[in-house]
Image (cartoon, rainbow, N blue to C red):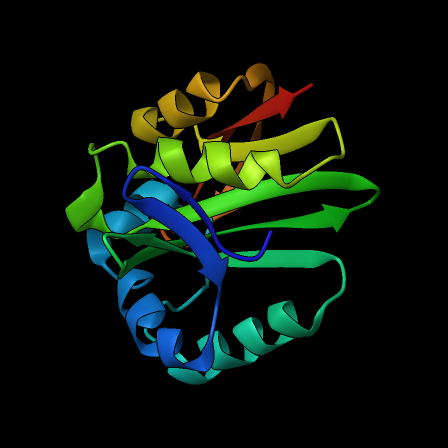
Length: 162
């Protein structure tokens, strides 16, 4: 999965030059609230850099930058936890509701041969749940967990593809 394109949305490897834009996207207050399960302090650049360095170095993690018309608009990734492959994505709020997440997820899933694949979203994040279900994920349950962005326990929906 080097660089893949569908319409105006493409995936490519994340590079050092992406870090400033990704950091800015991942600390947008509304985005952080919707994602809910975020870093304890989204404004902590040192923690962000350390986290991204660990992810980029891990053989169990695949990360891609999402571009639209060549502009960096988010990121998408997968990792293996306790033998299960999970996916996650983050889209710049300026691009919500434009189909970017759906196209990026479809592209990304083409490169994952393992099934099943799991995903999680705050149960009140209707947009993200819609994107996942459009990609073929089905709800398999919910659980209550602490969401750092909301400083509270909230319900999280667990989904599975395949």
